[in-house]
Image 1: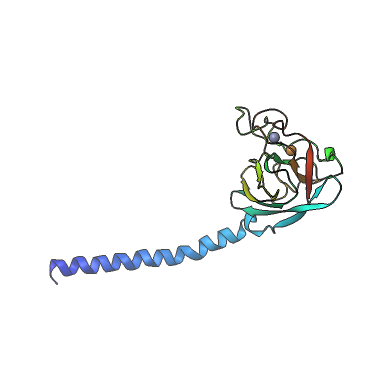
Image 2: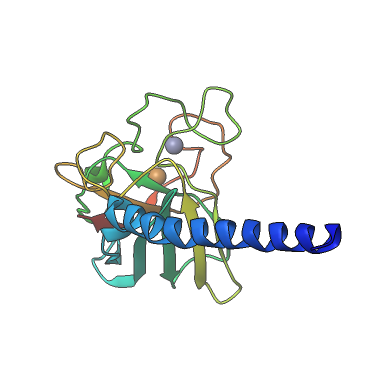
Length: 189
Ligand SMILES: [Cu+2]
Ligand SMILES: [Zn+2]
């Protein structure tokens, strides 16, 4: 064998080793992600009710590897921005939804993404309704989970709730960004 051939053979052997290793590693990776509780949690879909108790839309919560995806479909809103948050109690008593309590805040922070001491785990970006008063929006909230038994779980004892407000959230004023009345509410349980 000349030198060039030896190099070729060595390269081929190296390739086989590398590919062989990869084959061995793949099932292990798969097994690990299967065991992760984040993958097993079923999505939750819940009705959003208005101050009269009528259905104004739905919210779906889906566990991701790093947080919870929230899909909101809602109608009957004033066009423009509305504060929307996860509140600490899973109770939506019309007409004012005060029963939902304060913003979900297991880490004891202040309100808003534009607050140096923020943000509440339950804070979301503003919901924007179109000219016809409907909104179909997706948020990813990395500060919460659907996995039970941890402080930032949306499925803690008593549950939590998703609340839509009449006005825009300014993202810094405590306790709720000056977002006004609670006009929509969905129980997360
Ligand atoms: Cu709120
Ligand atoms: Zn807040």
